[in-house]
Structures are given as C-alpha cells and as structure tokens.
Length: 170
Image (cartoon, rainbow, N blue to C red; front, side):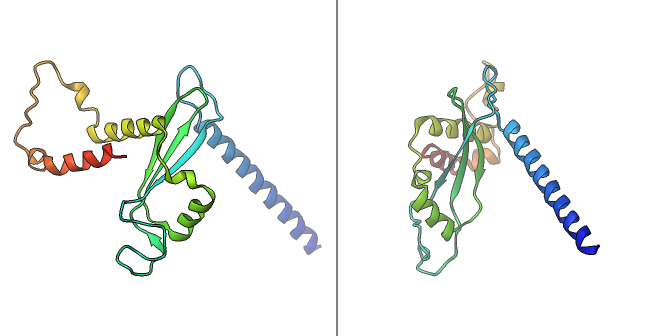
C-alpha cells in the first residue's frame, strides 16, 4: 500500500514539474516577443556575445601568470533579434565567467566572440548611450548652453570621456 502511494505521489510530482516548466517556457516566449508595434512575433532569437579585454585570453593562466578558474572581466551582451529586422540589447552582464565555459563557447560557438554585425553594434551603442546619457539631451531647450556648470560632473568629465571612448570602441 505504501509503495502504491509513493508511485502515485512521484507521478503527480513529475506532472506538476512538467506543467510548471511548460508554463514558464510559454511565459518566456510571450515576454520575449518583438517589441516593434507592427510585428509582435514571439519567435525572436537571443544572440549572446562575449567581449574580453584586450590583454585577456581564454586560458587557465591569468595575464599575471597565476592559475585561475574564472575570467573576472568579461562583458557579456545579450540581444534579441526578430525576423522583421528589429534588434535590441536587452542585457549587459559583467559577472565573472568560468574558464571552462569560455573554452566551451570558443570551441562550439565561436561566433559569440565576434561582434562584427553592424545591427548588433548599432543596438549596443543605442542602449549604452541611453543608459549613459539617461535621456538628458532630449530635455534641452534651444537657449541651453554647451558649457557645463561647475559641478562634480565637470571635474570628472575627463574620466567620463574615457569611458565614453571605451563604449564607442564596442
């Protein structure tokens, strides 16, 4: 009798997990739909790109020559691409990446390390500029001056320009 209830309970648990997984996948499909007003498709593709610093390589040795398990300074960009031509950068991730994952992606998905497609570069620039400028330039009136007021921003403007040049290099 106890075995019968254990089997029935296991089957019910598996069914619940499968239903929850199916609902989650359907939600992700709907949530990742094309945001272009005239399209609205739910079959958009996710394109991932990995950007490593220039002095970084995919190896178990760091640039300093020490053993490591993680690459600490990658930038991972995730885009959504629709068949109608809509491209958007949806995620910028700067978390460390395991060397094993980097080697696996280098062997089986080599295209993740090349950000050469103009549409993806343009989408990345648009998103980074909107995050960087925070829509400040749209609220300027015709009488506004280009000279910044004396503030912390004006003092650290050179550092922000260096960051901006790094963003343009993407």
